[in-house]
Image (cartoon, rainbow, N blue to C red; front, side):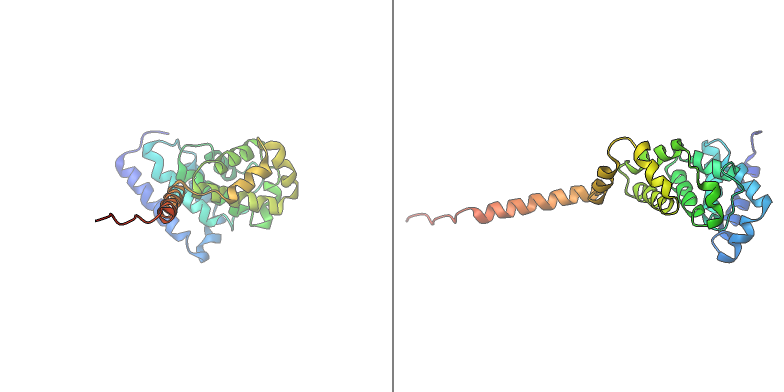
Length: 212
C-alpha cells in the first residue's frame, strides 16, 4: 500500500491496541470473531509485509487472532485468516510464529472448524516439526501443543506424521522427554563437576602430620 504518515500509523496502532485489549475479555471474543469488519481489519494487518514499520501492527492483529480463535468458525481450508496464520510459521519473527501456532492450536478446539482443518498441508507439518527441533524451550513446547491437539482430533494425522517427518519420529519425540534448555544444561554440568570434585576430595587420604 501507500506509505503511511506517522499520524496514520499511530492512529492505526491505537485502534488495534483497543481491539486487542477487548479481545482478552470472554464476553467480547464472540462479538469480534463474528464481526466481518473486524476480521477484515485483522486480515489486512496480518497480510502486511514484515517490515520494521509494520511489526506492532502485525503483532496486535496476531494477538487478537489468538484470543478470539476458539470462537472463530472457518468457512473452509481456504479461509484467508487461516492461510495467513499458516504462512506466519515460515517467517523469521519468533513472537509472530509463537502467536500464530497458538491461534492454530485453538482453532482446532472448536469442533465446527474440524472439517476446514482436516487436510493440513504437508509443508506446514514439516515446518512445525522443524520448529519442534529448534533448541528453544517455549517454541518446542508450543509446537508440541499443536501436534498434540491435532493428532487428538485427526487420527489420520498420526499415520501421516512418521511419513512426513525426516528421521525416526518416535526416537526424536522420546529424546525430547529428557531435553533441557541450555541454561539448565550448564547448571546441571556445573553441579556434576562440583559433585565429582567433592568425591575426589573425600577419597584423598588424610595428610600425615610432619615429624618433629
